[in-house]
Length: 295
Image (tube, rainbow, N blue to C red):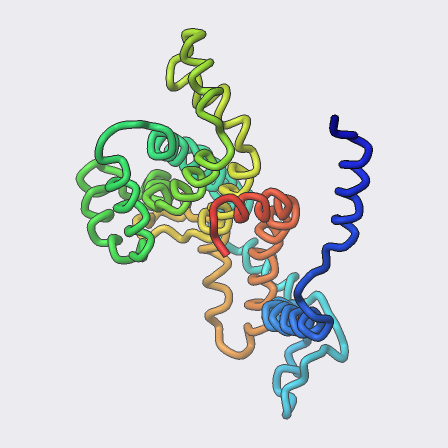
């Protein structure tokens, strides 16, 4: 008869004897490489913040300095002073940005989930081919279909409406691919079969079972779509009342050298919401990437 205590003791000895094959030098090399890569990614944010705090005279120093000597918030005051001179109230721009971002994320995630669920779990002929086509469209940029989208929206009367800002962001397949990979890797078929036996429809299964079980993927979808929607300008919007905050702020930085400080302040203002969303959802993002196979 096998003694379970001997098996446990043997397992613990084997576990203690396990060693990583990577050497100490290799570990140090990887750490140095990651620090170097992280520094390269941090430098643009650092320079943007520094430039937003520089007075105008420090932009003419030679050689250029990577730090600020006399920090000031005058650039931010200039930005809000310019916004006060607009005919449209500043609160209107904020409402437009929040509305477009919220509606775009909700509709985008729902549409992506409706497409990802059958791609991951439907057992029908030709599904692998459809999945390959979806993955293949990742090679094309959304800008390549701008002209076609503009014609379609003009035919449906969507030009100069909120839909002109929301609809173009719903055509991407990145969310479909992410949700499809996560559903396939984490949702057992047995759970879906049990729900069908209990009389649940496919829509009920998707929104009541599948989506609550893939919350990390949903948060990743929020991280992916928020910066795109938040910074959208909208080529099909011409009315001042429908413009978003980033599209208005982008015009402030077109004033030449004298507006370099306010232009950097605009970048900081636009960056802060996206950075907050990323930091809040970082854990879910890493979990989704590990399941979806994206490196």
